[in-house]
Image (cartoon, rainbow, N blue to C red):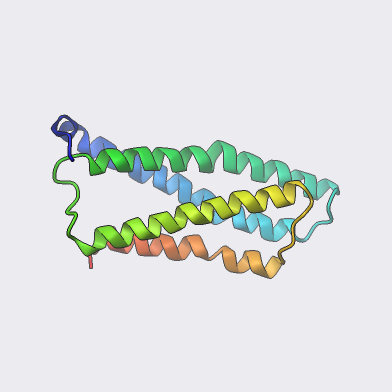
Length: 149
């Protein structure tokens, strides 16, 4: 299903989708890095409490709104006539990678709650590895959209 009335706004939707995606990714690159540093503190100390505030603000004020806006503008793009060739493989690769990014976003939210409750059970090394996940998904998404393999 497409909505022809959206066609004049295609480039605006695309620009806003890219802007919001960039903001979302910036936050997703930074949040696991904060968790790495948070692991280096003791629960309850001043630095730990500061990281809790930073993580909450980053997630709630930047990452969550950017993710929602990315989704909204992405849906508007898919509803614009001619924007998506549903038979193209690149489209499905992108969708799968984006769904994985949503899942990683959810995992980051759960990990933040663990830190908030001084109940983190994961190591600094775990978060160092997790910090690479959004980069890999970002690469897959961009290559799928630009190169369209």
